[in-house]
Length: 385
Ligand SMILES: Cc1cc2nc3c(=O)[nH]c(=O)nc-3n(C[C@H](O)[C@H](O)[C@H](O)COP(=O)(O)OP(=O)(O)OC[C@H]3O[C@@H](n4cnc5c(N)ncnc54)[C@H](O)[C@@H]3O)c2cc1C
Image (tube, rainbow, N blue to C red; front, top):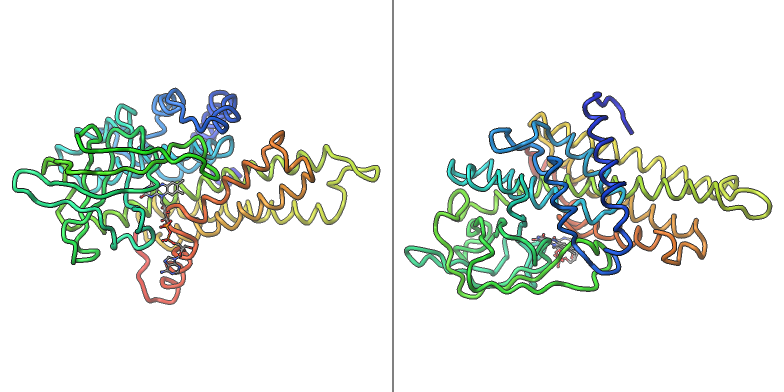
């Protein structure tokens, strides 16, 4: 879809598509099989400026906004959904959050390093016992005068075994709920940190995921981002950006599924003609196509609203929730359309289905986004920028 895109945006799309086709595609099967996060792909993404969307040029940003970022994520995710992740882990997670809430010193030090890929980023809220209820987190930081002492665990952390620095959300007042959360710019070389890679995930196999355990980790006070106990709001602001990255990933995957399905429907013949000529197959293709185009409109609109700085939390949630519905439906239909070949690893239908399921859980489950949309539409919560 290239509705109303400028020539520059179309060029960016082409560049991202070429990169994904030339640099990522040759490794998809091998990296899926070996659950391998490939550093050279990450480095190349940094080189192309993919970690600089929405970042001020003085910190190394690329002068482009969410809409352009979404176009790049879409092209990359279309080839291999695992590689949608670094946009969030570098740019819309740590770098943009530090740009919004950091001190001048923090901004000057950290943002250029996340943008250049010198620091490998992450953000960590989820724990073994705490997912959707972010304010219920238990990992804690105790004020010890000169430093904070961190103890606890974080679970399901993307880039968990490779991250050098990232946003770590912890409790600094255990009885204060959302008002007791603080964000640290964590340095993962500090002593007391153990990381355990999570193997055998259903999908996102070339994305690194880990549990991280903190045991008496001494953290200097200048690593607090913004004010102590004000981290919950930062977390929600961060999620409102990284969720859009997720929606763009769903859009890319939906495009890949549609393309492969159309190709196969034209190639495969039964009863003397292409299966694409049968009305029931046409219904599948028509639904996939309509849903894909509708998703594109929602994702691009949410990005556009963000670039304008106007309320967009509900629109971002709609793009995220609808993205999950669209890809899971499309992946299901795709596997049916391919018949038995869909059930073999010779074709990508299995990967599509496995990768589609991430969108129902990551960056807020479908239930949580339904709640956000309904509460905003009903007027119970404001639609924030
Ligand atoms: C591959 C992968 C990568 C990830 N990367 C990161 C990362 O980088 N950083 C990070 O912090 N986290 C990360 N996560 C964690 C992810 O964001 C959480 O798993 C997600 O927020 C859901 O939390 P949970 O799994 O604990 O589910 P739970 O919160 O336990 O939810 C279980 C079920 O209950 C439902 N539910 C819960 N509360 C309600 C409610 N109030 N109303 C209705 N239904 C409800 C949910 O919708 C869900 O269906 C990652 C997860 C995966 C799988």
